[in-house]
Image: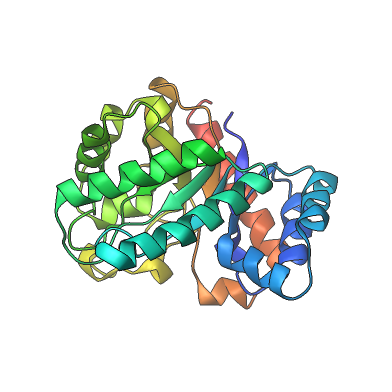
Length: 271
């Protein structure tokens, strides 16, 4: 079975220490943190040793953190300044024992060559620190919205440690085929986000807020899990939702519901 992970966007409005406590109480073995949450916690007087102790005491691993954003289309001095931010966030993730940091694509179009070059530079920094960026595709962006595009970017880096973030919502939202999942070698999947999508509204109109719990939508999640298992992926599946209605509910109940529904899908997949 894949380790179950909670992306803390699912219970976004809770303070970071509470997110950690709730994730463990709900039964997860992993937690996916957002850099902004950690930076806010540190800025309010928290410390990395205290945060590491909270995670250890809760029995939680941090397989991935989020995110490096806005880097794909930068150039010149703005790119060089961003690399300082990237280095700081990669070091922050490494200090928490986290091996991957999500690198989100630009919303606008830019050249595939620049994206590959920039991602390659981020990989070099990550290697020197000990935490690597994982390239994300987002189905509502203009260009990097499907698996085939992100695989092309990874291939252009010519780096075996280049990885991607697999997310069923974005496979669907970007108009790609779930059959494309079978083209991704297991070692190329940095982390697998997990969620579902409803039948309505139309695919092109759906946003992050339309994501639903696994099994509550129409995506072929059972087949997707079988496919990633077949290519050798053994990492976490991370429940990632962005629903304001869930943020208003009891966060422990939400986390437990997500855990139960993920387990049902995994069991249906025979894994």
